[in-house]
Length: 136
Image 1: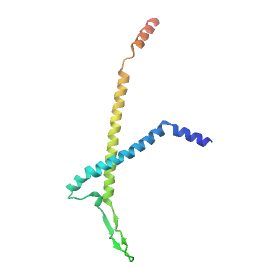
Image 2: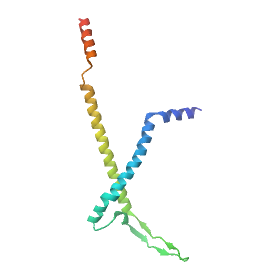
Image 3: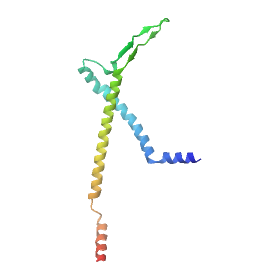
Image 4: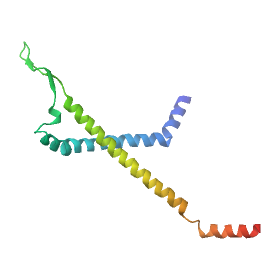
């Protein structure tokens, strides 16, 4: 029973819930970025490179053939274009997350400065003055 109790405690922590939300949103964000890269960024790059699509770049190790039964056998290839596409997706996602964290840190810094710079309420100021007068 201790394991179940420990597991409930673990799941109830805020960090675990935050992590789960982050993973779900990250997955959805990854799909969006993959679409931006694959559908918007890569076509112009392929056009500049002479109409080459990165997804089509590959080294064929063994060509497609037909076996003795007449069934087609697919070619064996190294799809390095898909790898390049994945690396570009990763770099764009990493950059977007970096910029998001940078913006959040800047917002937190502004909030912390506002908390420090904000004068105390009038009641606190009055009580502080009364305390100082009573000390004298």
